[in-house]
Image (tube, rainbow, N blue to C red; front, side, top):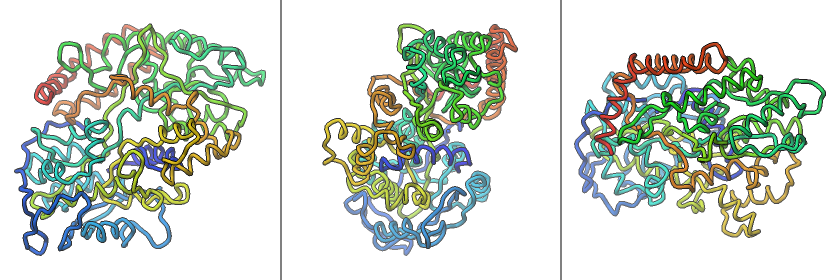
Length: 570
């Protein structure tokens, strides 16, 4: 299900949280007719005998045991301890069998890059397994064909309290994506709190100090810092080889221009409320034109790399690690993927993460999409649909714990071993990444000097941070993210604690009919137009032509379809 990029992004987030003690970490069709609601009062095992519903224990063992068929997307980056493989009797299959009475049987397994195609073939054949991970588009097809169980009642009955608490708070958008006409037709592979992917501004604080510059709080101050980083030799090598603002042509994600656009109160690639009770596409808002005009001027002035249009994430990272670039927009993952690698090359370098600079007196709000890795569905008629919910419960317990303190968690055994050399969580056919509170817990323990409330994993992080001063490059990243005055985690935390501090995509309906046909072309047109404008290869008024063409070439129809969904799902 997850392609190489998806697995890499997930790995990056989880590596960031390895020492912290937990693993942290979309498609668009109209929903179809929901399946008939199952009766939770009694189920039937694969032996054909009726079994009582029991006391709805979230971790209760099914007796007699049930055999559940599933499928698996393997990943080339994952390694396991000796004796454990994707398809043998590994720790996850043993755990499900011994704890829940669920015997897993694989119908097939393929590399993650081939999973989507294989799943399409499987769905088309009509011979689907009891449990499988599907895309939003595939979920729409399955619901319309009445091939999957309605999980509303079993989720309400069997989901563990902590999972329900997370769904009510950070995971509500993901839950809505799996809901059709008020019925839960799948368990999302929760991607965690979507706000965790918000962008902050990373700046070389040692360069700020050397050039006697303030931390940029406004767009004008950001431009001044970029100008100084280009013209005042912040690295002190006597050569004009440093860059200004590092941005990619992408409009969302680490390294992208999205954070700059947000500074103008523009929200690309998501659907936002337009003030009249309807949704509008953020990429065509008037504020976007103002932001692009500013970027165009910065490019003219040499404050953006001349190769902006062709630069990718890896080249941006090279600029940072080589000491040429001192400003870029990043998620919390970039603390491990980019910022830490510079320190290994230059231990004298230092970073600070800042809230997004704003064009005016109104604070900038970062924008995010809804993160869902896929949807776990149960085959219509499967004897024990609650097994899928119980498996999710057990995954959450082992990887995160039963509450925000990580109680009963065992992620060292079931997620990561040897500081992420081995990845065991991917051996489970059902996974979900919920919000963790590790940063807050360790930060507060460090402030009070009292780690007594921390679990074993977080106590390890506490000891690591207390035992270093940031001078060890191998420990720097964990040390840095717990220095609240400079940490991207702290910036993220402050945004999340503000009511409506983050702009989240309001559309959870999956791809509409017209979006399936037109959105790829519209997205390509958007990217080409934005790049040309920024690089001064097109006048800023081309933005107006882009908006007109976007609407005419399918955008207006997509907007209508999106709002039909919105009106019926408020």
